[in-house]
Length: 522
Figure: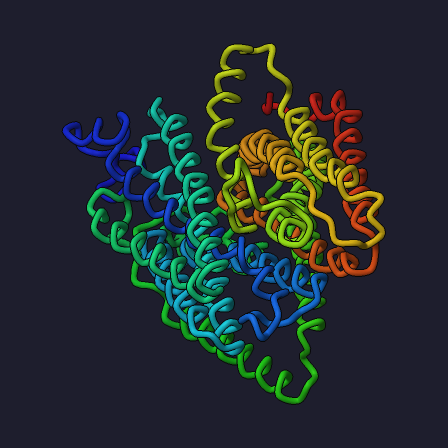
């Protein structure tokens, strides 16, 4: 039987087929959820570092700029590390629908917690948001894929609409939270993020009848006669040679172990914090260490696995290069919400054509550029056809553009000797334009290459590997941004930008080898 024809994984009924730009109705439900999830996540992210760095008297936490950026980056590291576990929980225990639902509930609870003006509730909220995003983010895209049969020619267009929804939320979130944070207080901005996530959950539940797999628990279980067990990089075990079977109820033992592990970790962390052994700096350092170890272990397991053929190992080698390229680019990209926000708040104009706006609104420029440029880039690739650049070159160009976005900054920040100054709004807008274009080139090509280059035995875990490049980027950033207070702005942005440009050029130089070894990626 065609797996896509099963009752829980079928396309929309014919009468529903043209409900949303010719797409299944379920796409509207999932895209709407992503609009509100990105609204809340990036809306909060746009003001988070500003809240950390603001004075206690003004409602902030009074951190130095470097510490504020470091803690913000550590939060991002935690989100993407938890995303790996979130994919595993959906596959083995919860199922995608429940994983996304409970993830959204945790996110909303986290934002409501942050709306309470105390430091304790801030840290509680960030923990809840990290756990919830880790459950929701890797599984929404999986649910989008389940709306279509594998041979449905609407699939690519559907994902394009879904990607646009992500960036609509990324554009709108900072506009609302930035204004509220600037005019009413930071916790009002966090409240707006909470309301946004609540609206996303309401429409997600209301539209659940259009979603595949909503009646299931785990997506699959493995046949009990599978011969061997092999450690999986997604923190579980997979049977070599196992075959999908009808799923049963979630394994109670697994649930008990997970709950016990979470509780034990929380108790240990609380005890260490009470004894002054777990400081914020140490916690950040631990997350960075984990972000480095996790992808090393992931690749080591895949290269050593007897289930990976020699041909597949050959394709993994170029993927290591692409993984590192993604790490370098996202190291720059994520600073759009940390060091660039700090620069915008302290040394950039917040007036355009006579209109005053909060510094947090700069973050909306990134989403706006991606919404506007994505269809232009897609149309360009269609027009070029087989003459378009190879995927590795698209990724390399994306990394170079990311580096150039930082190399712009030494020009307006040089020659001020620490005095207060205000650069033109167009410098940061121009930087975000380069960054947005680079993101479109790298993310679309990188995710596509991930699914094609991963070994068949690890096909279901490919997005976990991609998320680890984002976790690693944030982990490295959490250490690097500590220098923001200690070096000049031209030196900080110039050196980081130059490293990214050099990395992109190195990938371009390796293009002949990458083209030979990345088959079937074009």
